Image (tube, rainbow, N blue to C red; front, side, top):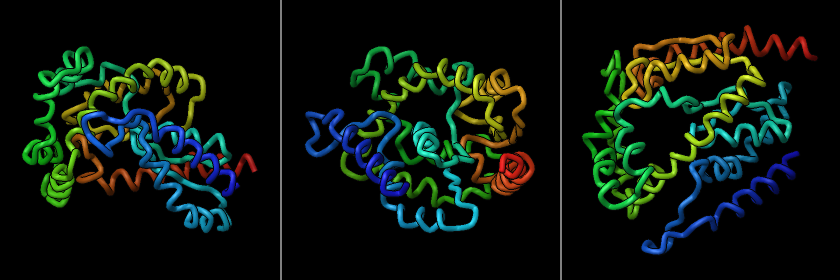
Length: 255
């Protein structure tokens, strides 16, 4: 299985590697929003995965970033089980006004004029503000978060890559109806943790999941975009309990 997994992941990575090269930036490549980050991480950690596969449970729990959600289903088709998915919203009611410059300008007409206002999101104070906005306990959020993110923005061409991703995010929206149909059809066992004060996504965006997944367990957190930063214990305890009571027991029944 691992040999097949390595071959298939390498093939996917190779097929994406030449999607588009930015003509004005030598050596910088653009990728679809489901980037190579997760694929590269999986390839780098195959020895670790092999060790996990040799354990009695013989299962893998994967935490996939929102832009790489498709990788979770890629793994499932190969016989792995993905138990935790950091997923993006699936309904446009979830967009706050912070997205106006994306939806109303950049995605309709990409140009230096429409990029300029959004580049402000990549500045130090804006990054810090995103981490702290809406947090119930901001004192729990380490400054290391925005200091390191801001530091990464100083790398050559880092802002250009982020602006490319800003523009490419529109493709996620195009898939919302398919995600909704998928969830309605599959009805996966689901627990949702949704920051009610998120600067980017509205409470309605979280509630929209319940239309497709009426049996989902919803936790409405008094938190912002990075809810795990100041609501870590609530989220971790909830995930452990949900897995124990709803997922692990179901697997035992199937056996």
